[in-house]
Length: 116
Image 1 (cartoon, rainbow, N blue to C red):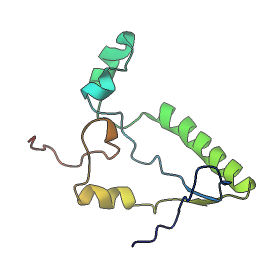
Image 2: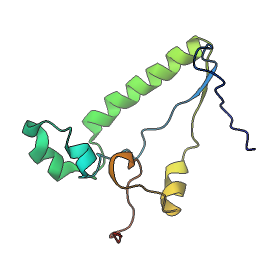
Image 3: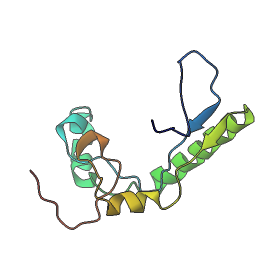
Image 4: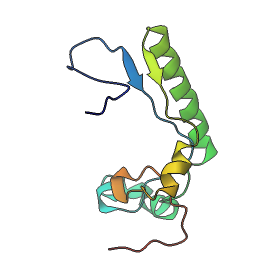
């Protein structure tokens, strides 16, 4: 059995430790039915143009500030915050673990990908 650095034995106990992800390299979700179905019609043209691109700085900078504040609050409450190592995103990209659709959290580095 592999031991995880963060475990949960029940959902009622106090939060002691948590993994908070990173925003570096975050991408606007791809044009997949499960994502585009929930996009308001008035934003669909913009979404179709921006899908699969990195989030613009005017979006990512405030989001990073909010994430940093969230981490600060958690730590102030005595909760241990673990973060993925910097550069992990690049490692996962190199391992070709990017997932298409709603779970696509990793930007593609290849110019083209074959679809099955």
